[in-house]
Amino acid sequence: MAYTPELCQEHSCTLRRIAWALGVPMTKAMAHIFDYLASRIDRSKVCSKCRDKTRCGTCVFRKGGASCGV
Image 1 (cartoon, helix red, strand yellow):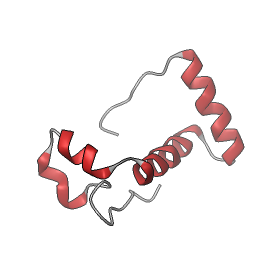
Image 2 (cartoon, rainbow, N blue to C red):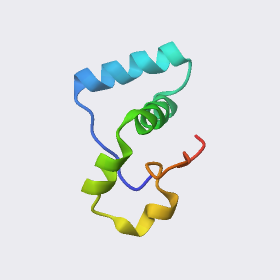
Image 3 (cartoon, helix red, strand yellow):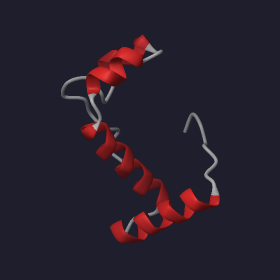
Image 4 (cartoon, rainbow, N blue to C red):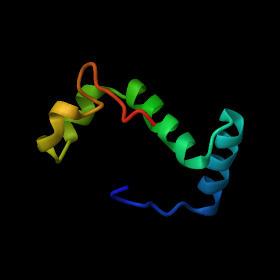
């Protein structure tokens, strides 16, 4: 993992409960959340505000984008 975010107590508890509901570890629950959000967020908004144009070919926000398969 390139970056390990710190979660406040409330968000950590929320993530833990989502993980329990999904029956997966918290790390996998976070991946599920990212995959879900990526499929719901307006892709053109993300692209227009993106600061890293070097990864467009593999970005989940491009049309038909893929997840990392976690």
